[in-house]
Length: 374
Image (cartoon, rainbow, N blue to C red; front, side):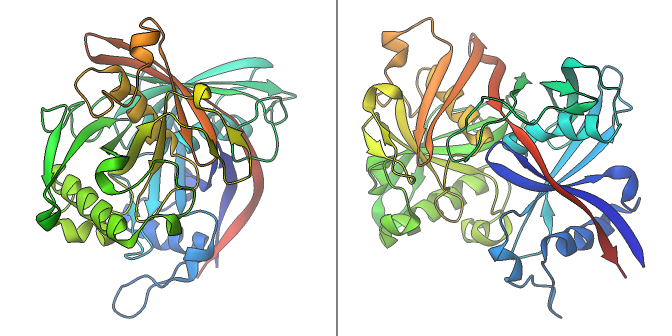
């Protein structure tokens, strides 16, 4: 019986199973079964994944290796496990789990560790893009404890600063995949809905809350009317067609469950978070809710960066929703109010070319173990 070491890690507000590439088979076709086993997923005789894994707190996998590319320290390969197909989808990345890459690599001796501040240059295999991970090391291991508190987490942690360099077009090759800052989606009897489709860290389709029958302050999936949920899935599916992810929009809910992300945006407004904290209007630039096949409990970091970038570029859906550009024209920040609180994203843009998006996260190793494979 073969045993494969793994580590279960929280990165930002997400969690994933981390593997070292050297411990996985050279044949990548075999990786998916290993990933399924790690998450408690299995497949029936027809190849369809069962629903056992849907009760697990994650369906994310990361594979890490020392980089052989000049100028890079670590390679990061992310997989979002599709619960319908049982296949790891690597067509997008995860900004939250990016925060755990540097600490994992350091703790497992994949890179040299020095006491104090460390910065690693990471190559993201999914997007072909680069990010810098800066974190602190104490006694040879990445520091866990600290005073950085993220909405949705019960404890503070040591800061991990992520700088995503030139993040536009990681999937499609273009910041605006259709060449437009706004497009119109034919929604059948509902008429057309205006969207912004932007590819920055991850592809995301952005719509106004009012255009889909929402307020932008929803906290639970049940608060979204069935007609709005159906409309969102149609819009997201048709955006997936525009990206070339699926041929028919109806396929997206099953075969492309991770990308594109979807953001529903509305003007800043006071609301109570899922944990009962009151968020006031002046604490944010606008409200946003993320939807994949259902409402996200916070807001995915990759999607937040793409949404923040869209807010800084005139002519997108965020015009008329976000007015920070008018109030603070020199400010690089965007503050997004989501179900768990607020997320702040500084961006650097020159003539509508995204130079950098920055994210403050924390990371914590939860446990390590061995996966038994027959």
